[in-house]
Length: 238
Image 1 (tube, rainbow, N blue to C red):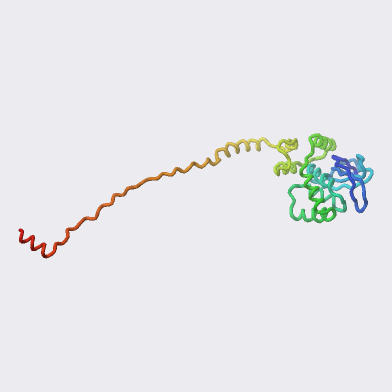
Image 2 (cartoon, rainbow, N blue to C red):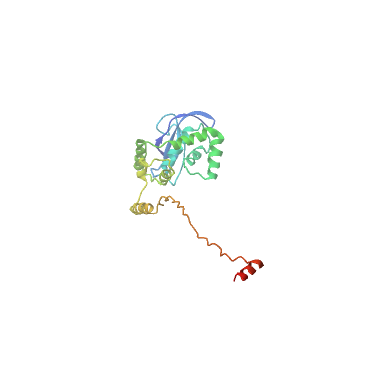
Protein backbone atom coordinates (compact mmCIF):
# COMPACT_ATOMS: atom_id res chain seq x y z
CA UNK A 1 0.00 0.00 0.00
CA UNK A 2 1.40 3.38 -1.01
CA UNK A 3 1.16 6.05 1.64
CA UNK A 4 1.86 9.76 1.77
CA UNK A 5 2.00 11.86 4.92
CA UNK A 6 0.18 15.17 4.54
CA UNK A 7 0.72 16.52 8.07
CA UNK A 8 2.44 15.34 11.24
CA UNK A 9 1.40 15.77 14.85
CA UNK A 10 3.42 15.80 18.03
CA UNK A 11 5.17 12.51 18.87
CA UNK A 12 4.56 11.06 22.33
CA UNK A 13 4.38 7.74 24.12
CA UNK A 14 1.15 5.77 23.91
CA UNK A 15 -0.02 2.27 24.72
CA UNK A 16 -0.63 0.59 21.36
CA UNK A 17 -2.52 -2.68 21.76
CA UNK A 18 -0.92 -3.28 25.15
CA UNK A 19 2.63 -2.15 24.28
CA UNK A 20 4.26 1.14 25.25
CA UNK A 21 5.50 2.80 22.05
CA UNK A 22 6.65 6.19 20.83
CA UNK A 23 4.30 7.18 18.02
CA UNK A 24 3.74 10.20 15.79
CA UNK A 25 0.14 10.93 14.69
CA UNK A 26 -0.32 12.03 11.09
CA UNK A 27 -2.74 12.83 8.29
CA UNK A 28 -2.28 10.39 5.42
CA UNK A 29 -3.22 9.71 1.84
CA UNK A 30 -2.90 6.13 0.72
CA UNK A 31 -3.61 4.00 -2.30
CA UNK A 32 -2.53 0.94 -4.24
CA UNK A 33 1.09 -0.04 -4.84
CA UNK A 34 0.71 -0.14 -8.63
CA UNK A 35 1.34 3.56 -8.96
CA UNK A 36 -2.32 4.41 -9.26
CA UNK A 37 -4.14 7.34 -7.79
CA UNK A 38 -4.34 7.87 -4.05
CA UNK A 39 -7.87 6.86 -3.21
CA UNK A 40 -8.21 7.12 0.58
CA UNK A 41 -7.71 9.95 2.99
CA UNK A 42 -7.61 9.84 6.76
CA UNK A 43 -5.37 9.63 9.81
CA UNK A 44 -2.78 7.27 11.21
CA UNK A 45 0.45 7.06 13.15
CA UNK A 46 3.94 5.68 12.71
CA UNK A 47 6.41 4.49 15.29
CA UNK A 48 9.24 6.78 16.32
CA UNK A 49 9.92 10.29 15.11
CA UNK A 50 10.76 9.52 11.50
CA UNK A 51 9.11 10.97 8.45
CA UNK A 52 7.71 7.77 6.96
CA UNK A 53 5.59 4.76 7.83
CA UNK A 54 8.38 2.30 6.98
CA UNK A 55 8.99 1.64 10.66
CA UNK A 56 5.45 0.43 11.01
CA UNK A 57 2.21 1.97 12.12
CA UNK A 58 -1.48 2.10 11.31
CA UNK A 59 -3.70 4.13 9.01
CA UNK A 60 -7.45 4.53 8.69
CA UNK A 61 -9.48 6.58 6.26
CA UNK A 62 -12.36 6.86 3.84
CA UNK A 63 -12.35 6.66 0.08
CA UNK A 64 -14.90 9.48 -0.09
CA UNK A 65 -15.17 12.24 0.87
CA UNK A 66 -11.58 13.37 1.22
CA UNK A 67 -12.01 15.81 4.10
CA UNK A 68 -8.72 17.42 5.00
CA UNK A 69 -9.75 19.65 7.90
CA UNK A 70 -11.69 16.93 9.71
CA UNK A 71 -8.70 14.60 9.27
CA UNK A 72 -6.44 17.25 10.76
CA UNK A 73 -8.82 17.53 13.73
CA UNK A 74 -8.77 13.76 14.11
CA UNK A 75 -4.97 13.81 14.17
CA UNK A 76 -5.02 16.45 16.94
CA UNK A 77 -7.46 14.31 18.96
CA UNK A 78 -5.16 11.31 18.46
CA UNK A 79 -2.32 13.38 19.93
CA UNK A 80 -4.20 13.64 23.21
CA UNK A 81 -5.31 10.04 23.73
CA UNK A 82 -3.03 7.69 25.65
CA UNK A 83 -4.32 4.28 24.55
CA UNK A 84 -4.76 3.07 20.97
CA UNK A 85 -6.81 -0.04 20.33
CA UNK A 86 -8.84 -1.42 17.49
CA UNK A 87 -11.18 1.31 16.31
CA UNK A 88 -9.30 4.23 17.93
CA UNK A 89 -8.27 5.81 14.62
CA UNK A 90 -11.79 5.64 13.27
CA UNK A 91 -13.12 7.10 16.52
CA UNK A 92 -10.63 10.01 16.45
CA UNK A 93 -11.41 10.83 12.82
CA UNK A 94 -15.17 10.69 13.44
CA UNK A 95 -14.77 12.88 16.54
CA UNK A 96 -13.07 15.48 14.37
CA UNK A 97 -16.41 16.78 13.15
CA UNK A 98 -18.09 19.52 15.23
CA UNK A 99 -21.57 18.14 14.53
CA UNK A 100 -21.87 14.59 15.79
CA UNK A 101 -25.06 12.62 15.85
CA UNK A 102 -26.01 11.10 19.17
CA UNK A 103 -25.52 7.54 17.93
CA UNK A 104 -22.07 8.42 16.54
CA UNK A 105 -21.11 10.02 19.85
CA UNK A 106 -22.17 6.93 21.75
CA UNK A 107 -20.43 4.55 19.37
CA UNK A 108 -17.13 6.29 18.70
CA UNK A 109 -16.52 8.65 21.59
CA UNK A 110 -18.05 6.68 24.46
CA UNK A 111 -17.51 3.10 23.33
CA UNK A 112 -14.08 3.54 21.68
CA UNK A 113 -12.33 6.54 23.19
CA UNK A 114 -13.70 6.96 26.71
CA UNK A 115 -13.70 3.22 27.28
CA UNK A 116 -9.91 3.02 26.95
CA UNK A 117 -8.78 6.57 27.76
CA UNK A 118 -11.31 7.81 30.29
CA UNK A 119 -13.75 10.67 29.95
CA UNK A 120 -11.39 13.36 31.25
CA UNK A 121 -8.60 12.51 28.81
CA UNK A 122 -10.88 11.99 25.83
CA UNK A 123 -12.99 15.13 26.13
CA UNK A 124 -9.95 17.27 26.97
CA UNK A 125 -8.22 16.02 23.81
CA UNK A 126 -11.28 16.84 21.71
CA UNK A 127 -11.61 20.32 23.26
CA UNK A 128 -7.96 21.10 22.52
CA UNK A 129 -8.41 19.97 18.93
CA UNK A 130 -11.25 22.42 18.34
CA UNK A 131 -9.40 25.26 20.03
CA UNK A 132 -6.60 24.98 17.47
CA UNK A 133 -6.50 25.59 13.73
CA UNK A 134 -3.80 24.86 11.16
CA UNK A 135 -1.34 27.70 10.82
CA UNK A 136 -1.17 29.39 7.40
CA UNK A 137 2.21 27.74 6.78
CA UNK A 138 0.94 24.29 7.76
CA UNK A 139 -2.21 24.72 5.72
CA UNK A 140 -0.21 25.82 2.69
CA UNK A 141 2.05 22.77 3.00
CA UNK A 142 -0.92 20.41 3.22
CA UNK A 143 -2.58 21.93 0.17
CA UNK A 144 0.63 21.78 -1.82
CA UNK A 145 1.12 18.11 -1.04
CA UNK A 146 -2.47 17.25 -1.88
CA UNK A 147 -2.25 19.12 -5.16
CA UNK A 148 1.04 17.45 -6.05
CA UNK A 149 -0.48 14.00 -5.39
CA UNK A 150 -3.67 14.82 -7.27
CA UNK A 151 -5.99 14.47 -4.29
CA UNK A 152 -9.51 15.86 -4.62
CA UNK A 153 -10.52 17.72 -1.48
CA UNK A 154 -13.97 18.43 -0.12
CA UNK A 155 -14.51 21.85 1.43
CA UNK A 156 -17.90 21.52 3.11
CA UNK A 157 -16.19 20.76 6.42
CA UNK A 158 -14.38 24.11 6.21
CA UNK A 159 -17.63 25.94 5.55
CA UNK A 160 -19.31 24.04 8.39
CA UNK A 161 -16.66 25.08 10.90
CA UNK A 162 -16.72 28.71 9.76
CA UNK A 163 -20.48 28.82 10.23
CA UNK A 164 -20.12 27.10 13.61
CA UNK A 165 -17.62 29.69 14.81
CA UNK A 166 -14.67 27.30 15.11
CA UNK A 167 -12.71 29.13 12.43
CA UNK A 168 -12.22 32.88 12.44
CA UNK A 169 -13.78 34.80 9.58
CA UNK A 170 -10.39 36.17 8.54
CA UNK A 171 -8.84 32.72 8.45
CA UNK A 172 -7.05 31.73 5.24
CA UNK A 173 -9.34 28.70 5.11
CA UNK A 174 -12.15 31.04 4.07
CA UNK A 175 -10.49 31.35 0.69
CA UNK A 176 -11.18 27.68 0.01
CA UNK A 177 -14.93 28.03 0.36
CA UNK A 178 -16.20 28.85 -3.13
CA UNK A 179 -18.63 31.73 -3.43
CA UNK A 180 -20.42 32.04 -6.75
CA UNK A 181 -21.31 35.37 -8.30
CA UNK A 182 -25.00 34.54 -7.84
CA UNK A 183 -24.47 34.04 -4.09
CA UNK A 184 -22.60 37.34 -3.80
CA UNK A 185 -25.38 39.20 -5.58
CA UNK A 186 -27.92 37.51 -3.33
CA UNK A 187 -26.03 38.72 -0.26
CA UNK A 188 -25.91 42.27 -1.63
CA UNK A 189 -29.66 42.26 -2.15
CA UNK A 190 -30.30 40.96 1.35
CA UNK A 191 -28.30 43.68 3.10
CA UNK A 192 -30.44 46.71 2.09
CA UNK A 193 -33.58 44.64 2.46
CA UNK A 194 -32.64 43.73 6.01
CA UNK A 195 -31.96 47.40 6.71
CA UNK A 196 -35.36 48.41 5.40
CA UNK A 197 -37.13 45.76 7.43
CA UNK A 198 -35.33 46.69 10.61
CA UNK A 199 -37.96 47.63 13.20
CA UNK A 200 -37.86 51.25 14.23
CA UNK A 201 -37.27 52.23 17.80
CA UNK A 202 -40.48 52.50 19.78
CA UNK A 203 -41.62 56.08 20.30
CA UNK A 204 -42.25 57.25 23.87
CA UNK A 205 -45.90 57.37 24.78
CA UNK A 206 -47.04 60.85 25.73
CA UNK A 207 -49.39 60.95 28.63
CA UNK A 208 -52.00 63.69 28.31
CA UNK A 209 -54.18 64.51 31.25
CA UNK A 210 -57.46 66.13 30.26
CA UNK A 211 -59.91 67.68 32.64
CA UNK A 212 -63.42 67.16 31.36
CA UNK A 213 -66.13 69.38 32.84
CA UNK A 214 -69.63 68.10 32.32
CA UNK A 215 -72.37 70.67 33.09
CA UNK A 216 -74.90 69.26 35.48
CA UNK A 217 -78.38 70.77 35.19
CA UNK A 218 -80.15 71.48 38.47
CA UNK A 219 -83.44 69.64 38.87
CA UNK A 220 -86.51 71.83 38.29
CA UNK A 221 -88.09 73.16 41.46
CA UNK A 222 -91.81 72.60 42.08
CA UNK A 223 -94.03 74.96 43.99
CA UNK A 224 -94.68 73.88 47.49
CA UNK A 225 -98.24 72.85 47.98
CA UNK A 226 -100.00 75.37 50.19
CA UNK A 227 -101.89 74.26 53.22
CA UNK A 228 -105.57 74.90 54.01
CA UNK A 229 -104.93 77.99 56.12
CA UNK A 230 -102.67 79.51 53.50
CA UNK A 231 -105.37 79.00 50.92
CA UNK A 232 -108.04 80.58 53.04
CA UNK A 233 -105.91 83.58 53.92
CA UNK A 234 -105.02 84.06 50.31
CA UNK A 235 -108.63 83.86 49.28
CA UNK A 236 -109.72 86.40 51.94
CA UNK A 237 -106.96 88.78 50.86
CA UNK A 238 -108.18 88.55 47.30
